[in-house]
Image 1 (cartoon, helix red, strand yellow):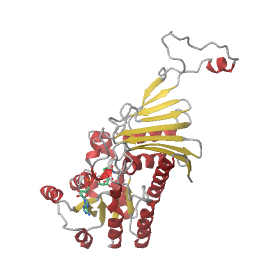
Image 2 (image 1 turned 90 degrees about the horizontal axis):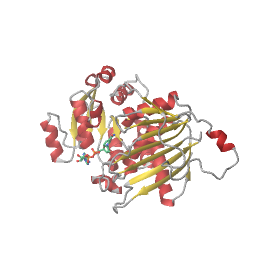
Image 3 (image 1 turned 30 degrees about the vertical axis):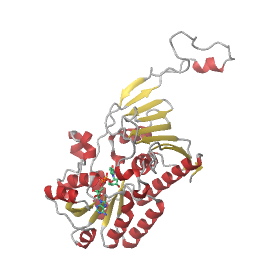
Length: 379
Ligand SMILES: NC(=O)c1ccc[n+]([C@@H]2O[C@H](COP(=O)([O-])OP(=O)(O)OC[C@H]3O[C@@H](n4cnc5c(N)ncnc54)[C@H](O)[C@@H]3O)[C@@H](O)[C@H]2O)c1
């Protein structure tokens, strides 16, 4: 059992406090998964792994809320660090404060679970990782959306290849139609912007999917509200093995465009909706008929489909054979379990500082690409 204190008890820190405080591991973000008995059956009971030592937040409103929940409230970060009972500090403040708090915590002998983006820049993360090595304390990036049901489904299709070789992938997530990233997220000085927000998750998952090197990166950012951050981005990653990933996110995207996932493979497409993976299916391409034969013949000056026949020229959409994908059953407390497991020396760290560093470097290259409006070489 490890004692954990949460620094920054807002939206996400509050979610962690509820999840750990009541021992279920349910943050607000996991609501769609709540009522699945099969997932519950394989989920680690974190009440046996983590105990909430208390929270620390500079906002009196958040302090009062924590008190009303019955949790201990540390007046300052120094009080957290001076408490010998605290084994782990969970950093869930705005992004610009992560590095400083994480370094102080490790120097005070605490392990760190750090919200994403672990730092706004790769240079800061290098400093943090140096301190982790020096002190021997675990620094664990909370890149948790690797355990979302939609991603796990796409990863299964990617790994098991029921549709043959994966060729390219599209993944999109909307921001709910906000005019800009909300609150501190719309300021660069606080580590704001959609790239540092959703970008971390989306890129982290793609890098885990395809282990080959990234050859080139191209990105365009959206900024229509005059904030000093990217309010959205469209990002293309070209991998050394030929695979191409296209990722899109935007604060102002009214809704999550459907389908959120589209994995194009040799023999068809896999699709799934964001977060829950609802409606996930394989669409196997229909037989190609004699298309190849007709197109290898000499041109006849006659279109395949005449104008006015009520069909668009070209390839029809639909017509494939649809097979629903069964949801994946997984330990929804994998990240908390692994955090404790690697502190106790029983498990290998699943989300490493090096992985987080590579994600940050991809994001930096992406924003640079947007600035110069050109592809940039990578790795
Ligand atoms: N992994 C995920 O899925 C996920 C989801 C949401 C947010 N996050 C991350 O969590 C972090 C917090 O985001 P949020 O949405 O909860 O923001 P928030 O603004 O709701 O909460 C931040 C809290 O930190 C407090 N705070 C600010 N400075 C502090 C200090 N010096 N010491 C102690 N407390 C301080 C604020 O008072 C506030 O309560 C960010 O890094 C964000 O990227 C991660």
